[in-house]
Length: 399
Image 1 (cartoon, one colour):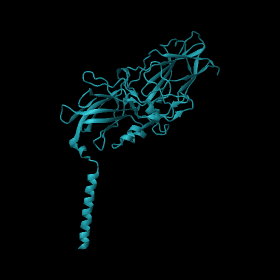
Image 2 (tube, helix red, strand yellow):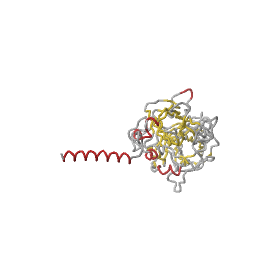
Image 3 (cartoon, one colour):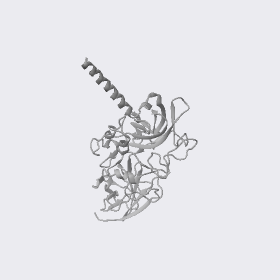
Image 4 (cartoon, one colour):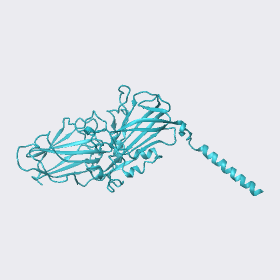
């Protein structure tokens, strides 16, 4: 009988301990289905190809969305691993309650990042995710799928990301929400959210700036001191501007004046490609028909990680990170068939930017023109516009 009483006492103690433990745990009752609402919006990777032509730079193949707040224990989570949508994708996800939400978006992540993006991935982990690429690549099928930045290449799509704060409000329909750019339904209604490419792009073209008919070839094109890693998602500088600009007809648009926090982002840019890497597939002759700056021959086009170090181009609204030793600023070396060699210092390269380098080859010099980025269009689209390019002359040298 005493043994039986002792057993009952132990069982009762266990239940009492479990009850106390539950009381000490964070309250997750608010994450019940009664607190869940439907939220819809579009994630946008704008296309630059006409007539709906498929473009791997804007193709959404997979998408992960997280929403955090200061009330709920777990984030709200959405994932679609098989999308194949050009330009925009409509998200319909369940959100816990209203108020301020911190959103994180990851599109087309490589496999080493995709493995981390679980339903309960901590917010701190999402903030510090990095992208690694030891060498320039020319197409997405060459994108490394391992964190060493070089092995297991595969095409999981062009990596893109974004992070922002928005406010969830009760909508007109029952148990539906909408997002606004300011608290208490103020500001504009958020319907389209951009994602930004996690890599930058460089294109190099050339033309003959002299009338001679002699054969002229570009025999080598190399880049070194380029960035090999960085944050997967942009980090925004919130000191002067918010995520969203002035609403138009009640709809919020991404703020064109918002800049990245380069001083913070450079902390993840720790690996440098110090050895010169060729970005020219073969020797290329610059035929006489390429005789003006509006008719140039494409030599190479490739993708790199962001490199925040270096000078800005004339007219750029944001300076790059200072590089007093000069060993973090990317450089390109051009070899010509007549024996000339020229080394070109490149401006800093931001993610989601397309830097066009135009080589004007004269009889004695190599003139380098950097085509500026269009600062008035910050939506996720490669910018190919030319705006008053700066020109640098490099004297001929013997090979």
